[in-house]
Image (cartoon, rainbow over the protein chains, first blue to last red):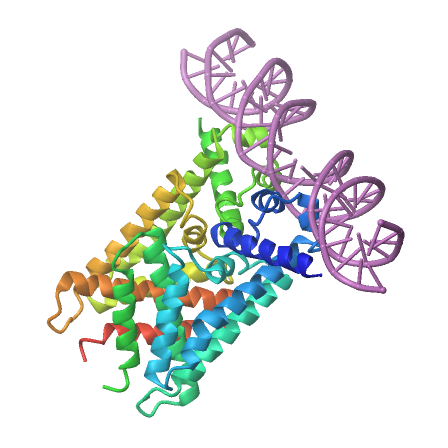
Length: 195
Length: 195
DNA sequence: GCCATAAACGACCGGTCGTGCTTTTTTGTC
DNA sequence: GACAAAAAAGCACGACCGGTCGTTTATGGC
């Protein structure tokens, strides 16, 4: 009982690593089995299809994201500090450990933006959850009389853009000042209506 | 003479379409040949490797980008109008024709951010060119006494973020208000130091 | 119209892919 | 230690991959 679950976890863990580098579609059952010293069929038996594995990987990533980004955010005081904690933790998540490892969701977003199916649906759901959380948290900001809902969505839109630009600059373009740029932009975003 | 060049162009055109959907690595010589009613080997003869085809696709995309985004921008008056034209044209480019078609560079950026090689190098060069153009154009903005170079880079960083967030919202998440959000954020970005 | 050459073709290579099937090994329980 | 169940392995399949041949067809300059 415990044995099967353990290897299943190990497979998902390795698959997540592979997905960050090559995308969810780029996961290879053969390569996965070799890395884990398992036979391809023995590994395959745990998931009855590649798609099931992809969904499991997505769920695992979402769980880690909630633990490492969302929960620390919600533990911070409402308003700007909470949003700032979410931002900092998100940058950490994107940067990965120890060097720029990347974000599965960013990779998958490009992969599945016009590839319908259950994987895309799950991905969209995760992204919606994240963006709605951001919009909700943002409504606690001083907003200079603007409509709270529209204001929250607007802040969430720009917040997400900063993270994406941070990834592009830090990873592909290897810019050292990526984090500095992101944090400066964030502070300006937070203080826009307050000042 | 002219015949070979014509089919070569047709191949690159179709490959570009395929690359937008599936990535540069996802281009399939077989599928390409089938769509163009060519034999795989006949098609392959035009490029001596898949990598050469990928580079050709990247170059073609860069040329179109310059024509459809950069040139109209440089034809606009310096300062905010020029940056705004670049922004609007870039959003058009990302949205594609007629519906959300996507941006090769965004897809490739995720694909190659940790996959070294000539394709990545070319991609990085294109991205650097684009970001440096943005930074240069941005220095014409009223900047409230800040150092021009750092200011330009900062604006470029945030500018790029807005485009990326626009793509994510408009394509994957299918949000109708993506453009509205992007344009509102842009105006705020432009007027930050001016107001 | 000749003829070199460019362009396209069809068959095929070794390899990898996801996915079945059957068999063997391991595991946990009584 | 026997035994059922779970886990892993072995093997094979059809499809597709990028790439390489030798051959045939079409083209363009003279």
